[in-house]
Length: 450
Image 1: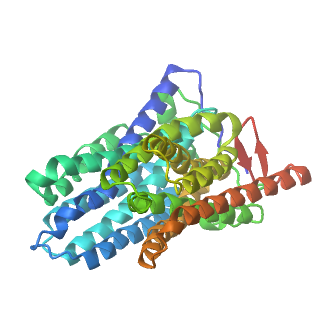
Image 2: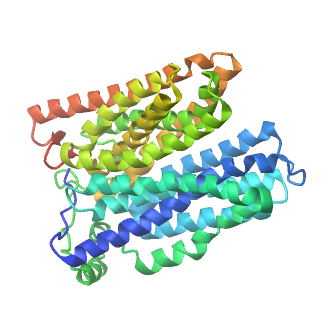
Image 3: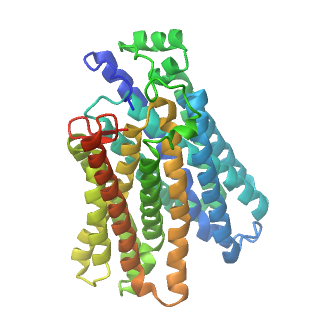
């Protein structure tokens, strides 16, 4: 499998287009994170609004509907992206969750609100893998993992913004106001992306749209990439079938299993961290502060992991990061001094969130342009099953009085992810020793070629 040809890195114009792509994708993912977390921030106020009729028993169902929409969006958007282009899908996904947020703001009842959250989930689930694919295709070699890490800081920034908006607006203006805020991307981000975001050059070339690719390349001083070959010159397969070709199916399954465990961790720990810390004896104020601290660690971790991965490769970094996540999450079960616990929670955030991001970065390296967005979308989509299972599992632990096992069980998920990546590394090493045409790791190129 060939990675797309490297674009020109020497001109000022090439730096300009990378900056434009990363900045616009960052803005989109920021709004994605804001919309995703705004429901949790607004939920307490919604539960006391008798006109809406939302009950605690149905609040979880509404959240699950949105998660299901994200799963479907991730699985389908990748296929659409590899057919109609990155830019169009980004615009569609952003418009979907923005319009849906407006529908949430005016929803007269729970059923309408839940339907709007389902629509929002479709857009939210499809936007992230598409943005990762586009950034990966414009990022210079040696900076790709770092820039994907930078992109993913936007998700945490959006989550923090959702909490901040909740504090500022809910008490004085009510929960509908925060959902009206979610319409802003339609008015700001969509026009900016429509006007300034370039389509992927490699995608255009592979679709035979050479004049369009040449216009973009000329505008930004880039080299037009050559058409990509798939396999050994064999006819191009259906996009999804490429993920399960003879040389790729094992890698695909291992990435899926890792993503399942990774998002189980991300959503399980994010959902239940305050409650688990309270169960360990910390007060409510400290428990809520831990959630901000772990997200702060997540932002720092994206920069660190991306920088290191550009030197040693995203799979290797993700493997070590998941192992460190297991150690740090398990250690949270020990009741330490408050200052030491804050440090430990911050460290857990550094490793937890960026480990999963490096999985996405590795997938972006492994698959060709023709199936890259599909591969990232399905890796994200399968991971969404973990995103559903993690919070559910935490609830079951509390329901059965076994919350003391929580950090240990989440640590086991991190160990499982570590194991899957170790198997992936061994598989690649075996293939490298067996045939130059099979899977291999490259410390210099930081990629798998399968």
